[in-house]
Image (cartoon, rainbow, N blue to C red; front, side):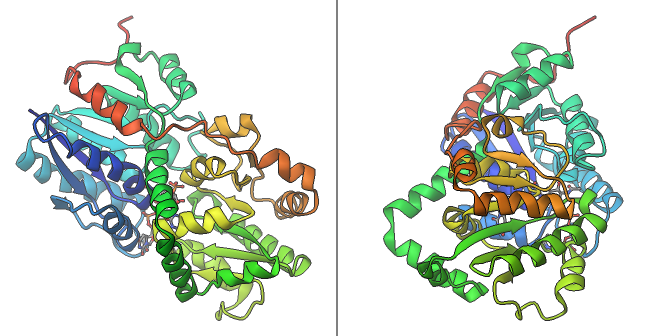
Length: 395
Ligand code: UD1
Ligand code: UDP
């Protein structure tokens, strides 16, 4: 019996790790599965745990308002010492590029516990973009001895760094497993769509507006490197676009980070309910968000996970960043990098709203990130792993 501990702490990690928890727990004869959440996020994490019905065995509950990177790193590292001493797992699984993942991987290394990295091998090779995520994923990758790369190009990045091929499994991204679970629920349950519509109304957006021919531009943002000037540009671009296109609704579920909300208030005022076609709403539960994404015309975002989900739903994604570690959808033509320059955001959104050919080109459903079986592949690979060995080629 292998003792596996999954450690995660933010909304996107939870969305991508909960399907794996569910899948692992289907094999109690092979895996003793434990879940530790750091609580780097609180409300936004709990929303996801509820949807997937995952109850953590350990909760470090570290979140504090306005926390910085030192707070998160030190609290996770210290908190994990006790958890690992108590649980003594054979393998710790961490995900992607958050500070939770990096610090939890380090904590496991300090007790010589093998680390498996889910969503391994994504790289921009620019340590300040995204910041601090590129360094987080490189450090986590250096510690891990088992790598679950979502795509062939992420596998290649690891090979280029000298990782042994036998230590890498290409799995697809577990976000597609999560997305397919939700989409499947929606397609068999008509009542669910009505519930989601009502829930969205309670959040402040009425889906009935689409009946009069309106289109939705769905917006999200949270990247640290965009704080300040970047977010001011983004907000000013939304304001201008909303004036130019009164028939388009700009719907923005706001991340809870105060650095995201400050520029929104600076540009749109204290009372955010006053605009005719800009809707600032609280962060949505995953199911409502997927529903809204499906009904949207364009997605404007700096999110990593949304770059993976929206192409599968046939939605063009304009990414408000200068780099991406997810080149696959850019190559397929459904994702485009537009940065945070106000003029460039306006030009690119306008192009998709005005030019049907341009829209058609970007809205073909492609799914380079997986087939919904990533968890299955991870579990298969976990069954055969050799723990605690070096993953690099000897020189
Ligand atoms: C974190 C991750 C980022 C990931 C993002 C996903 C790091 C350094 N950053 O960034 O990689 O892409 O999550 O969303 O790991 N807050 C709440 N409630 C919540 C969540 C956040 O109030 O449920 C507020 C708190 O004031 C908190 C602040 O947001 O201090 C920042 O949270 P933090 O996790 O440090 O940064 P994110 O920007 O969310
Ligand atoms: N998401 C959500 N509710 C929202 C906004 C996003 O459930 O209001 C989901 C979205 O579908 C995706 C994930 O959260 O799976 C992305 O999270 P975020 O953008 O915060 O982080 P990133 O992926 O950039 O690390």
